[in-house]
Length: 305
Image (cartoon, rainbow, N blue to C red; front, side, top):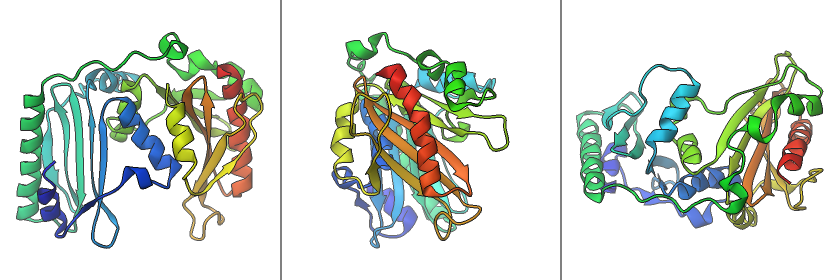
């Protein structure tokens, strides 16, 4: 990656962040998707320590991208050639070079001609390097726990069964990714053999959240959990491991104020996988959203335990 070109875009020096010093379990989970897909996740901070640029790479990513597009019934081929452009707040390059899915982002206020030229050079460099690299080899086979394991939330835990546990017969599963972001971490998750879904209720005050499973990644969860900030132990009925943890996020100012949306995620080691079950709600306390996530995680733990 020509970092000097990214520095041209932001107008100052960049420092590569240390993945080993990551303190957010949520961000560590995102990195893990790329690692288990055989890919890369890189981030850079500016001189003040503010995140300003990032790059991701997923090899053998076309199949996952098409799976996501098919679930949305988009009718268009998501495997697009690598592009480069700038908008009012950033410059980016994204798309495919053969089977490699690439994404590069650099924040900039009102980028000019120099920034436009720099992101084009980034794109050209990536195209040249990846074309010379040739096809990526296949990933190692999944463990015996996952070689014949579930490949979707419905297969793992039928929606009707999940709905009965939560006492909400209007609950359904839907694709677990926002389409505009689907060639990033979600593409990596699917490429690694994992899956993700949203669960949601038709009731106005019903449950909602996500379930994500990254096979064979329990060891990574155990490692990052030990040094992640903002996590707390949580007891999940049916979970074979006694060390599940929950992390929460809220967009309020101050946090957990009226009208703010909170999200809590339970992280569990189940059948050797890193399993995340989240719940999201507006105008509830952190304790209330945590309890919703805990209740939602229990049938998932039972299904995989």
